[in-house]
Length: 419
Image (cartoon, rainbow, N blue to C red; front, side):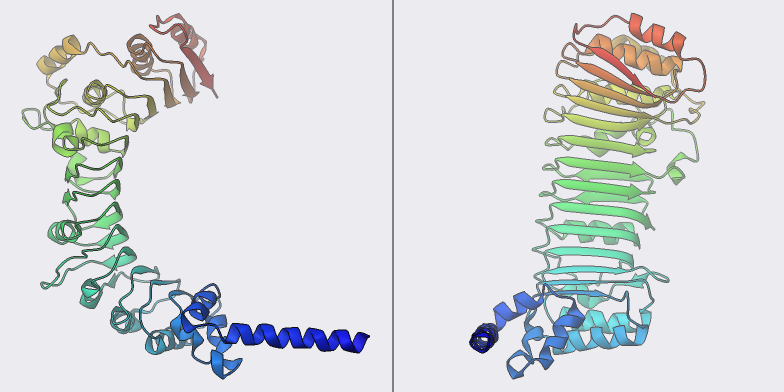
């Protein structure tokens, strides 16, 4: 009986093996894409039917974790040289340096017409992205780290690209502007930790998500369909090594955010609030952010310019529902137009009719911070709670007494303090 069972099991194994071996090449490639590349290549030794199966893998992910440098170079060369047809997704990352091989790999990759490319080679100086990469016409997803972006003169754009992420890179104003504007269907854009860019111009009619984290002097956004924007300006940005221009007639909220008619979530972090406070501050802007429901920002309450710029932004977001503020401790500019300040104080009669929740982080109990909370309580009839994260070093009882005694337009509004 046991011999019969063993025979049936072996027969079943043979049938299953035959079924797998008889699968179409495309399906075999999809199956092998779920394996480590090294393991997928090893299946070529199973039988003649599996010898070239890995060359149809639509997804290739290469990691050099347990490889010597020489063995990893051999693996990448072999995969790119012997692969058949199109590579749907190509992903390579490492902690070793491959500068001598990089240009060759990019040329071999471009010939496979990938739809998605992720390159994270973070060891050593930045890699210059070869011009052949910018000729991949069907690219939809591009993520690059530790690189130099220099567009070739013949660059015609990525007509199908919807996602672009550049991290730890260097380029120029013109190159980045052209790269973005030549991607007509771009929806997601991430630019973080960059050098060489002073005037950041983003023209992207289909863009829906934007995250910028870096140092720059000026920014201009033309993205009428943008829904989420997270904007960080470095603390050491060149724009803030001098005082704001007092007689500048330009309003920076209008200039940088004025065209974002579809914006729903806005994050202002780092020194970006200080950038928005430069120049002329208007209480009423030509554009109104009617869809904006969620704002979070870093602000220095010692700097009246920043405070008024924030109020200007709130006043032009009539449907704001959630507000989160983190207090930054830095010294205000000594230059301030006192006449303009008086005009702003008299014209700030704000109604935040839809604000439901607000929070203030790094709250130290300074008069300007307490005054801000008081204005929220008096401006928001639908307000339910204000959460305060206490970071003060002095006795908090006096501050709490002020907060509790403040008049509030909403009978449901609670002030919650956490330590």
